[in-house]
Image (cartoon, one colour):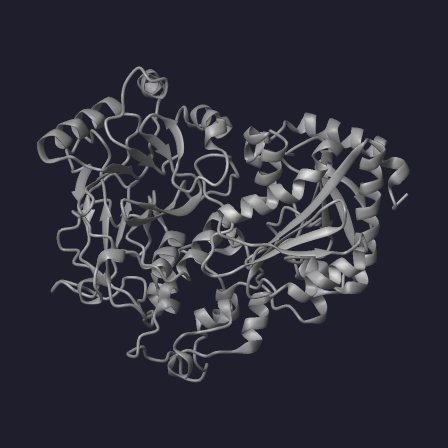
Length: 604
């Protein structure tokens, strides 16, 4: 069978007529092509092209071949993507794209899918702290890709919008065009991900220029990676914005074919060894600059030289983050259990290893070492144990206090942001802890009282309640979700979760606690493995379903919400970002809940 033929394109910027005219021409002269992947901004940068966009979305103009995009930002994006998210045909686990119109698909968030035998991995959106529902990726998207990096199958294509920072390291820059070396359009997170995923091809847009880097080798594997940056459609400099490839899927190649290295292959640009900096140069360097040398931790080659003259060896990133390293005693970096414990407690790897983190306040992990006792005691200095950027820490400037319903000694309740249904509640530990299962069992009596109070409250309203928690390996602040459902739907909950898990190739462990809260929690703590992500759901009759997320699986972080949205025929509300309310409406909802809940509130 002939290998698939793929077209790639840079920022479209809403110039769909120009793009698809070119695609049709190329497809007719040198095709047929199986698919088109677009990286960089897909939507217009001004309202002038909205009519052109609408012609395709509404079906008046035709998309010539299957087209996939990751640049979900620009003018008109929220309206088009919100409509696509509400489409019943797009509900569920659509790793291979949400359909916008015939032959046009939005690759949302992050994921992996097979296309004509090719393994395609993608990261949609750009890095941003704005929290807007479209056009930005989340920590959950990053965590999902880190989990994919641990899988054994080789990734053929990796699609991102922004370039990886440091991609010019070790490259021939004699003919590099102006603007390529600028930081604009580059993202250090993409560098970290591509160094872990190790794809055969990596494509990006955003910089507006065409650039084909020499192939580079990867640590721990034999194949090379080829990076290609693509210019924008209709750019004034007439740089190449469309490119064709015909790669044989890695799954169909022999080991010798995969290991071929062209003569111009360089070392990885993301394993640059840190060089001594002259004091004068150090003074010139901006304090907020991100050094390309931060990617040293992915270099585990035998030729790696130990750094420092008395500081000891650097830590092994693989061992510290996952608890294991395939190189074992041959690894050139230190396997330290104390560092591993700090990592499990949510401390930033760079902070553990170097005493600092270049990302500063945008980092999602702790920048202080956590004593074993501190993660259990809420009476210690809480400000030392929680991220300043955390949405759920009561002392954080980012906490939305108007959503808080009631505060206990160790836990508090708040309305969910972007609720699935009315009275969708979160039970949140006051202590900054990544999951409720790691907290001291002595604190669970209050958790049980909050849980029972909510059950009685919803029973008084003629409803049942489903509790679930997603425990990510990289989680920061726990929240146990409580979603009320009609009595008529209660008997169907278990089947809905079991069926959805089977579609993912997963199987739940089932345990009946007979509505004994402490018995159920004890069972969950026994099953919970800190080295894995973990999901559990508590059903109204006392059954608990749980699943440990192993390396070979892809378990959606919004799984619980998506299943319940389908059960309640609310598929358009499966994504919380599509359900955000105004602050005024949130205040009204919170005040209404407090009045109704007053007689059940255990803190009164």
